[in-house]
Length: 435
Image (cartoon, rainbow, N blue to C red):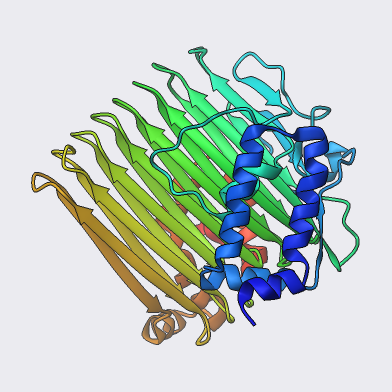
């Protein structure tokens, strides 16, 4: 029996079809319909990668529901969120919660559309099952426009949270579609996107488009935090468009869900732009994480540098795919991508596939890969200095990620909370501040 037959037999396809049918009663648009037909076509093609096959297999015995809107007391989140002075947007169960979010503020213009009416011509990014799912089933299209070049603009804090599902035989599905526009000559924008995992069985699917116009700067942080809850499914698709003289920094720190997939597509369209991307990825138990990074240089005299670190233990698997493409017109480009991974268990895996596609000779471009384990000789050395085995082990794990961690957590309030999350996730002693 083929994969699609299995999906049909187990009602996954039929469930999605019924959800879409109900969705169109309140949110029908030509754009949503177009994307639903493309999703339907992909499902019928039966061409699934291993990750998608495993994901569908895990959904087979679940009843899929569009998340229900619930009124949430913000105090429930106080132990999970970062305590920072920021404009906060709370995305709860598939919608932006207007009651607790700072929608009206002097820094960011927030627009909420009930219907997906943007005929967004995408010539750069190859869509997939998850982007079509988001475009067809999102309840609200969110536009965040930044055109006010005020001094001391507060950070934007975007929080994703699920609640209300008490049935382990059903899964709440939340789809999001967000556009962020940073207009020309806008500087010092900081955005934090925080996905909070709890013990609610849910499937979050987020599709972000970020446009950085000429002479703009952005720092974008994505966090997935997890206090030993591994039931959730999280899928993120990011598109970044960098025009002339843009400086963009992206930082990721992910603690694994049961299934986690992120597709990043970075388009350096303009000239003289700079892009920095650092990530730290953690996976444990039998969790599966896929991170696909595609960076294309189209303009000239641009610089990009990517540093990715991953740690696995138990039977977890992390798959990392990275490709830098240098177009013919992208002269004087300097592009680098480096991966480092640490295996903490014999049965855990980290698969890395870096790639370069260079169509211009007048460039500098390179990639590097390192995979290793905790060195017993280093453990022995630390123990000869009177440090017990557990603390020696913790020191070496910490040292592996410390330089990237300092860049990602450059705010004291964020840093302390992240240190607590990491210590809880790995069940290790929190002594980061000793370094």
